[in-house]
Image (cartoon, rainbow, N blue to C red; front, side, top):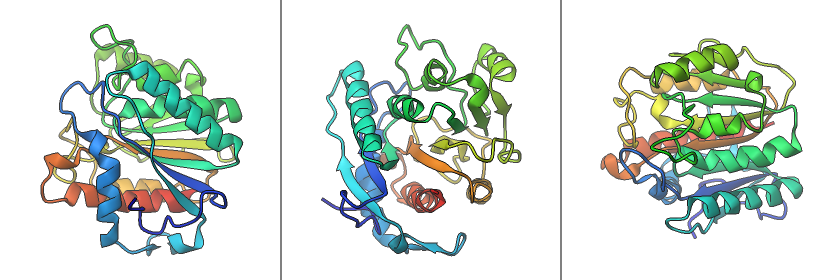
Length: 274
């Protein structure tokens, strides 16, 4: 199995575990994000382990690459159960999890497991979309509903949403009343409790399609790469205990540039962990 560059620790000694979640069974527009974990590992050979932004090196972190979780086709509920069970196992073993989807629904079972271990956890949600639907065409387990599902396990007042620029009117109204809602930018990303453990979920479609066309639901009017990176770097020193990066669909960008964007962001996310 190819490993992500710099994620070379044995799982028994790793403090952070990189977990691939190749599932896109509820995608509502363009499928293909299940191919992302393989693509980012292969493309990671094109970067350095050192981040000049954070002045840190992956070689100085204990990060192990678990590989991809084997997930069934056509059975969303079973997939959620398997992801949650693996997340719970890793957390009980004292690991922190950095996962790569797959579609955004894969974040839900991981955050459920984190909420049990860290009842006071805050969730940072960076995305183009609200993801607050009650259901999509009658299906509650949907990538369009992931944050609303999370609200069943975490107080919405502990959820911080940034970069949102698309969703139904009712979703925007609900977010404005219930979550910490900062649409369109990451300007106020520091507006969150400093000492709380933090889980960060990053949907790559927060980026403008000019920077990342390789995603299932491209949404014009988004962030530049530098704007996203600058926002993430403001979280240095925060108590980040878990993170995921989702919705890269590499085959929609044959240049590979979208995959490289994801690779670089994975490196920076890994180095943000406390």
